[in-house]
Length: 219
Image (cartoon, rainbow, N blue to C red; front, side, top):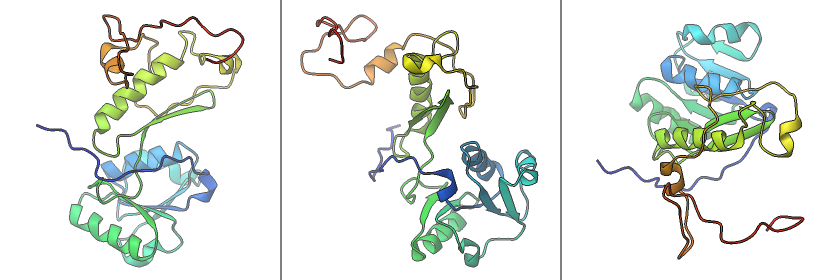
């Protein structure tokens, strides 16, 4: 089966958590996944749903999630800047997306990347650094794989970041689903990188560095 290519271009930004008034419609499997991703990055979320998944109930106590225990109505979008339509009903999600756009709001339709203004990238957080990878909604599994590949390149076996940031001692914070072991990049990872005309590569696909390292700075 041919992979779907993204039909829209997306601008990748980091938005201050306290500046994003987010409403999530739906508290089931998909909705709870979005809520955990958002609250894990410091956002506070209002969720509209008659019921919510058990795993997001603890977030009610610390104020990270406000639960409106009702079925969706357009007035639930009042005060929002970003809307996440994450019910199990694709038609309802599409209707929520239309309501949001009529109010000039950005929307993520969990049923359709093409109908979304906002996407959730695959994220890995470590020692104050954030790796975020997306494919415009076309290949989410590949985005997660690539996220893990990049994280493996940047994290030392000791668990610290490669480079100057490795001296920090702040605790690790991750939103990726599994710990990322330190490992060399795979052939698939190297194959995904853009190549210059005539560039030579090794057997595993990594580029051959024909130039000596620049002294005293960045080449």
